[in-house]
Length: 230
Ligand code: DX5
Ligand code: ZN
Image 1 (cartoon, rainbow, N blue to C red):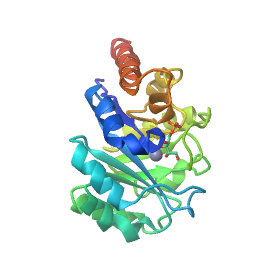
Image 2: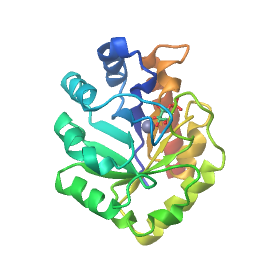
Image 3: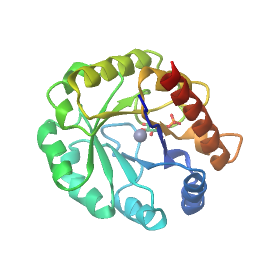
Image 4: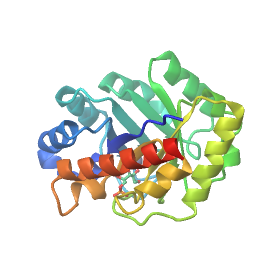
């Protein structure tokens, strides 16, 4: 089946005063994307960064920037994030009542169009727009903070989405975000995840961030080989 796993370190858990150093570490260790968490204090109970920081990160890495918008009415800010250099943008199904328009707009502007979904939201809310999505970001914790515990029922949700995508031959890929680390990476890949976001498991690990990326890569490669040969 030849599934490729991409690793997307979330800089939420990086040292913001040493962002260039931290990004360089994960980039040289083979990260595929840089995941940036945008929070507005309304959609989620936390605030983080906006377009200026995305634009600064754009200057220091060649990796695609995966921008996860945890903000109300994300359609208001699409142009700013596109101008800042976002390559992938996900908006939450709970935050945007005009998802069809948003996903089309992202595609027309050369951006990978993603839809993110909270743990408490049913996959059925994606039914109409799934054909338009380049990826679905399944939240495996409640969004807002790094370092939370993976919600076990997410595994079944990933499996069910994988089935829906395959049986309809949609092109959407599955990204997962929250509580992922070496201890559960095998399980989430088995369930059907393809793009793995990890924050604290990379930047707050006992080991260096680059070693943490390499370890996740080793687990991912072993697992995709096992899937292919099974
Ligand atoms: C949480 C964010 C995540 C966060 C994940 O709302 O969307 O991207 O950085 O952090 P960990 O991997 O520590 O759960
Ligand atoms: Zn995120």
